[in-house]
Image (cartoon, rainbow, N blue to C red; front, side, top):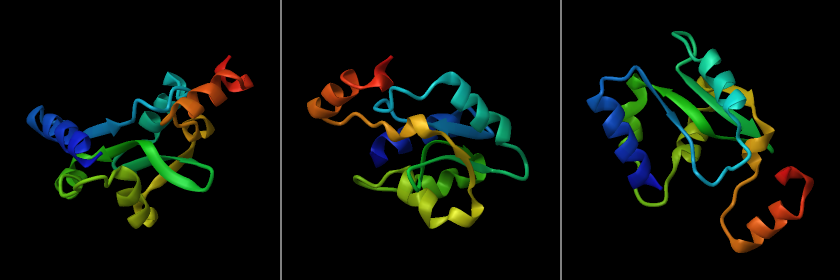
Length: 119
């Protein structure tokens, strides 16, 4: 996980971005309207804005560029979630329940397809 995150942050730094929106590809129910809520909440006073769901603070999230160096120190299977939880007091949390659906296995896919969530 860390290597993908670091690659994305490096790209954001190369483009001299003020922030990076980080999300995973295994949260299929996150809609653009949810991402817009994160973006709309990000400003000079809120430089880390993250999703909250099921008592978790995690991605999708937006990180101000002043956080890039710290994020680039992540290694192995460390992701942005642990980094966010370590800085919970600095994080503006936006409730996005759809981010709780995470597809990692065939059983997760089967469960999603047989639920009302897939429609």
